Length: 128
Image (tube, rainbow, N blue to C red; front, side, top):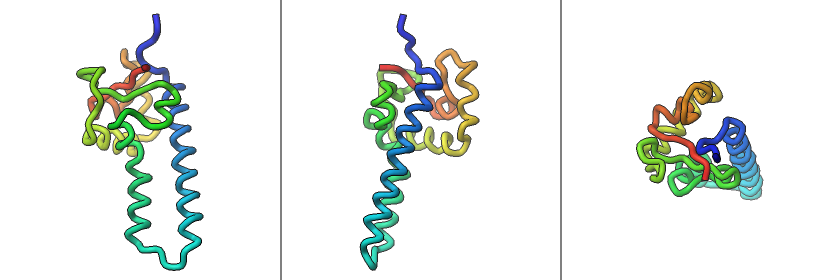
């Protein structure tokens, strides 16, 4: 029988893929902006916000690139067939950033392998 919930290794691999992508985008944005003399502050702010909101927006609309590569998705805990909304995604991301790696401690004792940020946001990770 196929396991329905991803192991911590799959989740960490997904996070690492997304982290590499975010760092690459930061380097590219920085390199491109350094070629211009007067870059408006609003443009810098938009680029920073887009990098910060990458995970919540992508999670709401299917999954991050790392999630897609690893074949995992974030769903509502109450209905694992339903995608989460943007509010849940932002709450989940906030607690994920706030707690860091400590959030994953609960995975080992949870039947659905839910991290603390999943529990607080009412979400669950599933394999597709």
